[in-house]
Length: 358
Image (cartoon, rainbow, N blue to C red):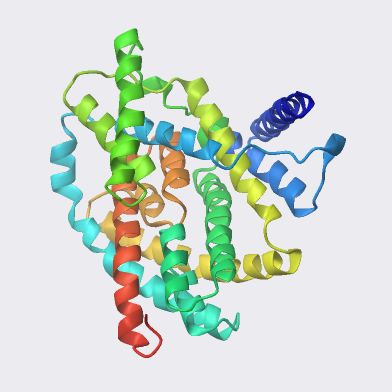
């Protein structure tokens, strides 16, 4: 009984800390405050092993899995019957994802190999621009160091979702995300009981089916596809309530920040340093790709940059939603990038290192 009360108190306390972090970041005009505020606060707690009131602050890691479908449903809710004409117009930009992914893969692998001193399989699969879990598992099967690869991928996603909103804020001259008053509520239709039921089914059934079919990032892609189908068919035009989206961002931020507790300080600082270098190179390549896509007339530069940026699908989707920046275009490119990363990268490794491949 005492343990249950302590656990409940810890969750409430963590929620209050996360809320405070979000409010402070929102007050100072920081981009994506509901995700980055909690992420920063809990990263500090985890990194310095702080235990206020004797508690280890944070939410269970699996709580993130509950809220990721919310983001998928939210993105899918932006689908309209006109989406098919849009896809028919910009699908050639997807072809650029393959050369972009290959260049990023080899460039970052070279950096991790020669600057970081990683062995060949560890450097190669730690350099993968997507599919964090899959890349680590495939890398381990080919002789890579699992913990080192996990640190690099975590550092990549964390730095990307922290840096990209800030860079976009500088470019736009104003904060992005909820700090700028963009929440997605302006697109919402009335949320009735039937609408709520349809969105709930899209989240639950979409996630379960996609995960069982082993679709890349299925826990988000499944709800996105099912929600998109419901909205494209006209069955509903309702959207996720703003409060629920804020809670989803808060939980995702907390669970990302809490991951700083895993590696040692030396490992983490080294991984972050290397990720600053690899991420900088990747962002330059993403910007060049975005400029090309923009020149070809498929999407504007900002939307294209988010679509090619090397952050996580969920986090980049949240950025696209917060900017009202065509989240369908962004999500499609990220899903394609992840799918290529987990399928093409092993083939490239076997081609380059035939003696090391499993």
